[in-house]
Length: 159
Image (cartoon, rainbow, N blue to C red; front, top):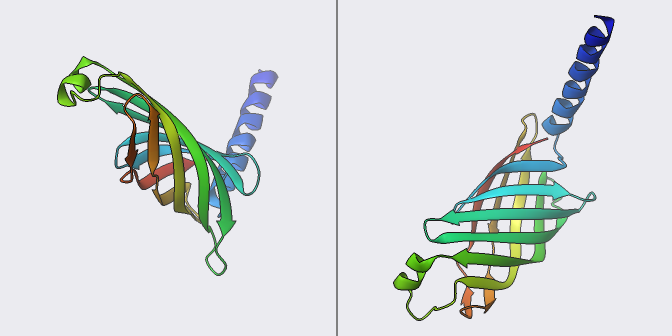
């Protein structure tokens, strides 16, 4: 019984520490969604100004996974607001429905490079992060094309 009570106290203390960390103006990891196109987003800081972000886009015709390496820079005068820039890469796999929509794209695998430029804001006092970015991409393997319209608004829970 004492072990269960002690384990409960330790668990409560750790949850309070985690909650307190996510309530400030900085965060280490955040999970949420990114809109346009819609993706699941996981962002993790490997140091105070370097983060990696993974994006999973899922469609009826297939999916695309994107990895980004982001360098973050504080914006003086606004606590919790940073701008970021960085490179990345993607891989997409598409089914036969995609090929019928785009008959000139006869390959079901797409691999390419990405870039990202954006703003990241951690809401002080709440475990929420909002970012807005532009994510151009160049598809190199599969059908070769440049896409300038990727990016959008992300809303994530921080911890």
